[in-house]
Amino acid sequence: MTDRRTRQLQKFDRRPVAVVDIGSNSIRLVVFDGTSRVPLPLFNEKVLCGLGRGIERTGALDAEGMDLAFANLKRFADLVRAMGVRKTFAIATAAARDASNGASFVAQLRAATGLPVRVLSGAEEARLSALGVIAGMPEASGAMGDLGGGSLELVGLGKGRTQDYATLPLGPLRLRELAERGRLRQRDMIDEYLVELRFLPRAASSGDFYAVGGAWRALAKLHMAHAGYALDVIHHYAIAREPAIEFLALLSSQSRASLEGFMGISRKRIETLPIAALVLERTLRRAKPKRLVFSAYGLREGALYDSLPAALKKVDPLLSGAGAMLDANRRYKVAPEQLAEWVEPLFKDKSRKRLRLATCYLADIAWSEHPDHRGEIAFRRALYMPLGGIDHPGRAYVALALFARYEGEPDPAVTKGTWALLDEAALSEAFLLGLALRVAYRLSAGASSVLAATTLRAGPRDLVLELPKKMASMAGDVVGRRLDALARALDRRVSIKLR
Image 1 (cartoon, helix red, strand yellow):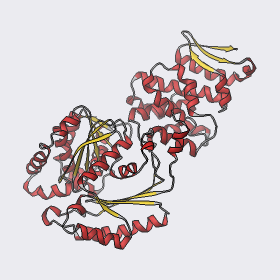
Image 2 (image 1 turned 135 degrees about the vertical axis):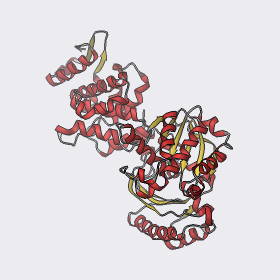
Image 3 (image 1 turned 90 degrees about the vertical axis):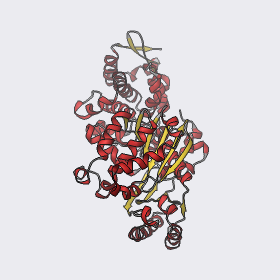
Image 4 (image 1 turned 135 degrees about the horizontal axis):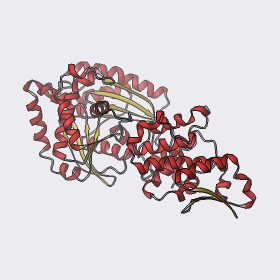
């Protein structure tokens, strides 16, 4: 539940902030809508510069990459000023840290752009990337890996905290320089580094391995296409360890020509995919996690999360984000907590209570849309909402419940693709929740006083709606029809009791 203090924290500071990420392979500008628990990106631009190209051979940043980075970082600085950004976090990682000309490059950047560029140590880069995972998945337990162009950061995770860490020179740009010696040499080099990390199997074997970084997210896209997966969302996409290893081993042996036919993968990204797949495959073999889980949150989100007050870090990201969506498009004054409390007597399974509350936050999300399309619009928005703290089955649950809230009957043409993400009990409960919310909104018209004076419960044989005698008129024909639909779903009959 969220109280007044939590709501104040959720609105901590909505003035835009920016993160400029200067990596070994790419540079990126993301402008977020503020330093809330779940900041939403207002602007996102990436340029593949290849600063770290050739660094293993020359020890220096790539000259062409520096020119490209300078030009685009000047643009980023101008955009930040034009957008009225309150604060900018500018961070440089492995290439700037390790190159012989890295310090002079950063100094010139600061002078030319005014960006407050900070070169992260390996330890700090690992910590912030891990905090990004924790920001999006507070329950994360196991180990995290963030593959950049020049380095691989590995961190143990447990109970919302970072543990042991390592930073290794295993980025694809560096490993590509070993290609002439053959794939076996690349594999052996990866294994030589990983075998020294005693904490990695200890941390990961009891949990999951969380993969961060653009190259690894591209691998997730490929696996989704390969598996014909129902939900095109990378964040929290999970694969069991052995099938993941098998897929990655196959992908790491592919040529560039064989990968160019895949849609949605840039040509520059394709160059590094086989190496990225090899690094992840060897890491999974060493770590032995239960699952491979992909995270869309990483270094940039970790930098913002690290700047939050301690109390705000503890706020549930799902409920915080859902609350912000509610505040941005609110019709009724009824509190989502009150809705959740009103429907809760119908449900025995308490493990999904948080999902039911999140659904109540979003239960009127499509009210301003055309009535004929509200169900499908609410369903799609819930599936693809940019929120953390929710896995794919959770997204399917909320989306299906919202569809039922607007449409009553499930439409397989719209929703069936997501049914496989839920077990039978969760699937039935999602539709039941939607039907219960249909009753709540039709009965009360969003008036909290009506819900406060009435109760809904499932008896052994009856679905019982209790209300004061003076409110008997509230149980009209349309309410009766929605009660009938809910009762059928519960295999009960409707009973209205006046008191």
